[in-house]
Every structure is written in C-alpha cells, then in structure tokens.
Image (cartoon, rainbow, N blue to C red; front, side):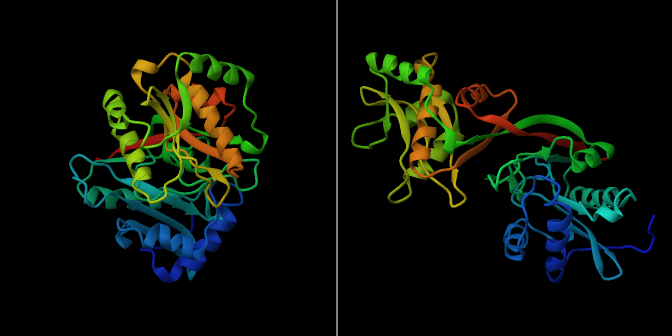
Length: 330
C-alpha cells in the first residue's frame, strides 16, 4: 500500500486533472458519460448543495489519483433525511490498495457530522451522473437512478457495509426502428368504438387533469403536467379522453438535443384502467416522438412498478439494472 498519499479536499484548480482521470479510467470502461471541465463545474461546483468539505481528493505528489464527493440537500431536516455518495473514482493503477474504502470512510464522516445517520444512494441525490446505453452511440440518460449493478463501484460499496435497498431498471428503445404493433392499432380502434380516443391535449376541449391526479393520488404527475402547461408554447401532451374528460396522459412530445425522446410519465385514471389504454397511449407516444425526430428513448422505473409491462410491450428493453444502496452510520 502506498503510504505517501495525501487525502485533502478537492479544489477548483484540480478540475482538469479530475476530468482527465474520469475520462480515462471511468468513461472508457463504465457506463458513465465523459466529463468536460465545464460540465463537471456545472454539475458539481455550481450545485447549491455542493460543499468542498464533502469532497476528498487523493494526491500522489502532485498527481490526482482519486476523488470522491458526498452531499445532502441543505434545506432538509438532518433527523429525517439521508446523505448521498454522489461520485467516487480511483485511478486504475492505484486500485485494490484500500484507497476507495478510505475515501468512502472520509465521506461518511462528513455525512455523519451533518447530523444524518443514513446514506442512501439513488436518484434523489443532489447531483446525478449522465450514463450511456451500452452498445449504442451515445444514447444517453441524464441521471443514473442508483448504483450500476455488478460494477466496481457496486462491489466497493458492498464490501464497506452497504446493502441493497431496492432496484431500478434503465429501459431503452431505438426509435428509428419503432413500428406500431398491429395489436395496438387494433386496440386503439376497439377503444374508439367505446368513445376512448388518444389525442393532443387542447385546453378548450379537454378537462380533468387535477381530478385524475386526485384519483391517482400522484403529486409527481400533477407537478410534471403543470410544469409543461406553464411553459409558453408548451410541448404537446398526449391524452386519452372520453367526452372531453381526460382519462390518461403521457409525454410531452419533446426531442432533446441528444436525440432522446423525453418522458414525464404514463398515467391512466382508475376508472379507465383495464382497457389497454396505457399501452396504446405509450406506443402512440413512441410513434409521435419518432415523427418528431427522436432517435431513441430512455427511462427508468422500479423493479416492482407495473408500468414496466407497458414499456416492455412497446419494445423497450432493459439496458442496465441499478440498485439502491444504503448504509446506517454508527
């Protein structure tokens, strides 16, 4: 073990060295995306929850050989909220010397000093890392939902007392090859005979978003839709309606600069469920997104979320599994 290493807090002047380390030893072999200096600064240093005291830089002389960052939401109650390990990397030639475990220990002490007694690594973290779907040319998702399963980071956490506390799966579909399944086309026609149609939301013709979200008891969907509608010249929202009443939504139809089709969610009013409306509406979104220039779609959902059946039906496949990893601090 190298006993001459220095463990200190990360400084802004170290960004070029960290970007070089990350892009050489993580981006080249893991699912995480590369960093530019500007991207790292925006994602970490410019984040209001970033604290230099929650970072660890490992130096061998003047060479940066390791980095870690812990964080928590500064406006949260320490007695009821958790901390997060947002990022950890050790240069390949310095691994298996206990450096990763040492970084982890120092980050845990930082979280513990804040009054928090639990670390839980999942998408609720203040900073999340972009990742790429394996086997495709930069088909990206903006944030990893948890710790990638069976990776070196996963095994490091496992070896240091973290346990698996849930699973999320990252889904992907190549929209350039998407075709509406014939059973979906048939189901759409069948539902139309009963008055259920899939269309673009028009505030002059349709009503009932809040009533649907009340019935679903889902504030996340309510906020997502309200945020879309609050934007001037907002992106189109797909809905399922009957006699003007909104009974489902998905979308919005939005193509990100990367070519990714955006998805805020899929929801069906309880009184309109069991008719295949979720599947037909989501497949329609895939088709509309393709027509809007999207090349792919990525999303994630919990392993016990029934919505995964909709995604699998539409042709999405699990590209990467992630696990929520938790540790109680003593």
